[in-house]
Figure 1: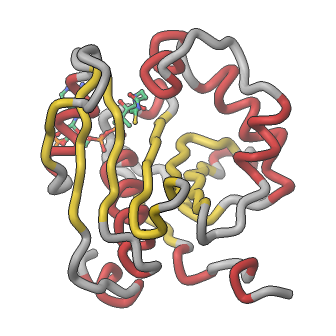
Figure 2 (figure 1 turned 180 degrees about the horizontal axis):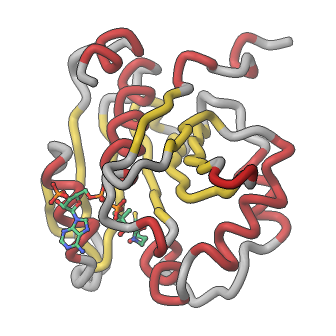
Length: 193
Ligand SMILES: CC(C)(COP(=O)(O)OP(=O)(O)OC[C@H]1O[C@@H](n2cnc3c(N)ncnc32)[C@H](O)[C@@H]1OP(=O)(O)O)[C@@H](O)C(=O)NCCC(=O)NCCS
């Protein structure tokens, strides 16, 4: 198997929310297609789906579901956050970056946390791990396009070291960007708690 397709176990993480639930973060797998689609269709409100995808959609189209779950962990890297309460495996978040064509050191990210799970630190942890994975894989510039009125995401980006700037061609959007210049390893992230 090509090294680029090795399952990157180093980004598996587990942490406890203040209210007690345990959350697992792990790189996505092809067999996550059903749970990924369920997360987008039922875990996110229409408003959150719009904030995440910038279009009105009620569910993830099949082609996008496949693209979201069959990733190479290099050009497209994705993490899912899961809860295992009451014997049930529930996807509660998703974060990914995709390298921008023609610029291997530049990648765009997207993130979403299920609405029932907002405000408990899952987004912060997902983004922190995503940034670390991007940095470790040679991404030098990580950006996301955020609707101007999306205060939670703009605050999360700011708190995670991203800088907001004018979007090059859409006044409704803000581009949040981070320059990843210092190499970070899973070990140094774990050391941060
Ligand atoms: C943006 C989003 C991912 C945040 O996830 P979350 O798990 O609720 O965020 P966290 O609990 O980890 O909060 C981390 C920080 O984000 C900011 N934040 C989160 N929710 C906020 C809110 N409602 N208002 C203001 N700031 C908020 C705060 O800075 C917070 O840090 P603090 O708790 O120390 O104040 C979530 O709201 C979401 O999925 N939104 C819909 C999809 C979306 O907008 N995606 C972005 C497109 S790229």
